[in-house]
Structures are given as structure tokens and as C-alpha cells.
Image (tube, rainbow, N blue to C red; front, side, top):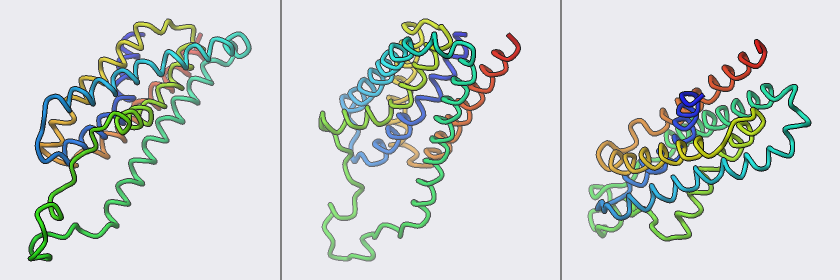
Length: 206
């Protein structure tokens, strides 16, 4: 099951990774302190949300024990589909938006008007981004509870994987921009759907 948890962690981390890539793209100057702080926020929330979901699922486990694999499949599939949908909507919005003006269009523009914006670095902004990117982990924690799986090790794995990918994502975004951002969210969504299908098939066989 640890391998399955690792792939769940990879799927969940794609949202945080995409946000980190975006932040790296927007950064005029890259500071290690900012990258570490973002990775710590994302990793901590991705580790904490499954704990909350797991505790919430304890109260339901006895009532739906006979269909727990169906519930886990539905939750993971819903999360994966949501990630794929959001990635496609974001891509469509980017394709339909007009190109950003350059200095050739605005000969007298100030430098601040043509440089990409600096990513938000305040505590409250990072807090909101961390909550937004970790809500899916809440449902995953509930799924693990329904499957009678301990939560401490999965939560640590999810948090560590998210920390590492978020840290790498900031620097990757600085280097190559939005080249793979939406594609990675789609891959993450597909991974969660496939894991949900695997859990369902194992439950039906058992």
C-alpha cells in the first residue's frame, strides 16, 4: 500500500506544484527563502488535511464498511476529474487571453509595466494558497480512513512529496515558465482516477 500512497501523494502534489511553477515564473528575482517558505506551507497543509479527513471518516466507517471501496473510488475519481477540468479550463482561458503588451507597444512605458508581476509573498496569501491546494487531500484522508488504513505514514509521505515538488517547482518555473504546468495537473488527476479504480477492483475481488 505504501507504493499506492506514494502515487496518491504525487497526484495530490500536482496542484501545489503548478502553483509553485507559476510563482517561479512570476518572480523577477529568486530567493531561496521564498521558495522554502512556499514549500513548507504547501507541504504542511498537504500533510495536515489528510489527518482531518481521516478523523472525519472514522465516524462513517462502520456505516459504509460494505461499500468502502466504492466510496474511495468515487472520491478519488471526483478529485482527479476536478483537477483535469480545472487544468483544461485554465488552459482555455490562457489561450483566449490577449498577449501581454511589450515595450514595443508602449515605447514610454515604465519598466514595472512590462515585467511579470512579483509573486505574492505575504503570510495570508501563502495561507490561502496552501488551503486551496490541499483541500483535495481532505477527501483522500477520508478515503484512507474508510479503507481502514493508518494515516500517520501516508500524511508524512504526502507532506514530504509536496514539499519537495513545490520547492523544485519554484525553480523550474523560473527556468522554463508555464511549459508543462497544465499538463502536470492533468497527469495528477489521471493518477488519482487510476488509483481509485485499482482500489475498487481490489475491493470487488476481496
